[in-house]
Amino acid sequence: MMGHSWVDGEEASAIPVDDRGLNYADGAFETFLCRDGRILCRPLHEERLSKALSALQFDEPHIEAQRAVQEAEQCLLKVRHVGSARLTVTRGSGRRGYAPPHRPSPRYILTATAPLAPATFSWRCGIATAHWQDQPQLAGLKLLARTEQVLAAHEAALAGWDDVVMLDNQAQVISASRGNILMITGQRALTPSLTRAGIAGTRRQLLIESVLPDLGYEVEECAITLDDLLGADLVLITNTLVGIATVGSIERHIYTENDGVVGVIRDALEQHIR
Image (cartoon, rainbow, N blue to C red; front, side):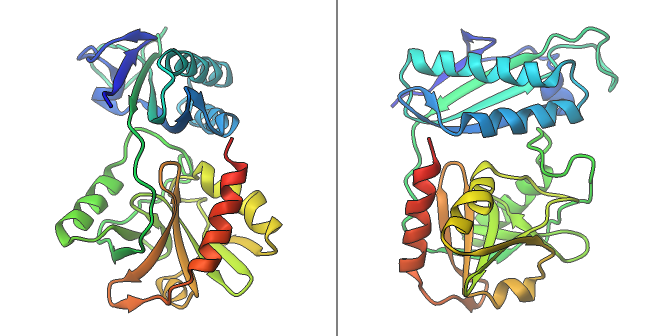
């Protein structure tokens, strides 16, 4: 299946060299799962994009986010896209210098690609030496500057791991390089607090607000240490594209297989993705 790409609603494969997203990471993005061109969990993506644009002090961020996602879905519907899509919103073109233009013209960049294979095996994970940096003002948002994750993903690739657990500078677990982390022990489900660093994923939101409570789990966002994570019954990594992946090991620590529990959670999550 060939991919598609659009810039400001028109088919294109390049952006201007003076784009502020390219030069200063001045923008945000969302990764969608699509069925027949429809963006699944669209309200959650719009809400997070709006928060990101607000933090970047875009004009009318809520309206801008709605407009960008609506235009993206119109493009995806035209080709009845099935698979993943990435929408990038930048502040558009501008002169050199960090300060934004007085009257910016935001740019929408959309790419659509084939679906990923589902995560049907347990992931082997390591522990990244690249740490999340504390930035409470930007925590939870999906901004363009993803340097820590790039370094962590590179570590995973070099070591032959499927992913890596990422800590912050206080040795607290924040995420994996590819998604959010959830740990389950008995009927308790814990996920790292993202008030200082990390990205608040849409599937994480569904799991902690609806799916897991409906299944009878006591859910908490809190500080989690590596020892806490290693002591869990079950560790999951979740993102838009893979859904839920089971962590089979973290370096030398091996988790007991628990396919029955994971299957129930996966099925319940799928019911909320629409």
